[in-house]
Length: 357
Image (cartoon, rainbow, N blue to C red):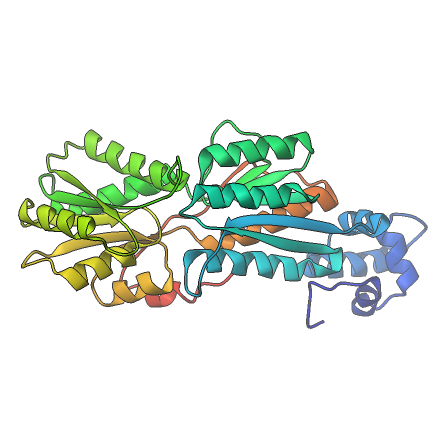
């Protein structure tokens, strides 16, 4: 068969060379079937990764399952596009099981936008919810509402400890911060200077993931006798006069070994800022996160040394697949599901960008 995601009993019968009735008896473990035919059918089931008991339970239920996905809005080439690609791929594979997804988008730099989106979601009933945990306190409030409705929910992007989410899919954010710090110290030594670019947010809380990565980063520096200075540079989208003045002040007070990092997927903004407004004769060694288009371009152009990637597409894919397995087939799910943490360089990015699920 050309599409193994669409498996019918008649297809199994054809592949095994038996009747539909014989396949039905094997799947439902009823009636007599010769050992030879049973072996033929089981061989086909194994080859196509078919799980008869799960499918039988689903066919008996005839239910529809619509999941809400609460994630930031994005433009082409940005981080969250990769996440939705994974979600869409999983949803397409599950279309014959009556699984559908409805997106609820919010502005990832504005907590009030998240809360307004939650209000819209709260007017509806969904079989389950996938949540991008940008704003920690607001996500916890939403989680409590979902628990009252007995709706299972999954976190992606970053975890929030001590919650009752069904599962988490994403990187170990603290560890990814540690890895960034280790790479940075190898580049600038123990006494260099580090610029931490901080993306400006609206609202009361910053990104959970950014805070957790930064904590891992500073923990490693403190535990490994880092003697240099850390300079914070708040970045707004307009590169306002205050941002440019702060950059000028930093340039005047750093030594020859200078590293720079942003703890979300937007290291390209720091690249643009340095390129447009100059860095004098100093070479800044940049480390960023995530293999989105603009970051990859900067990596290839030697403007960024390393990208730390967490397989964002895989997160979305696994979240939908796992939520479906839990609701449709009563499969248990590990609560914490860490993605691999990949270190990307100019020399290996060509191989990584072709990575597919």
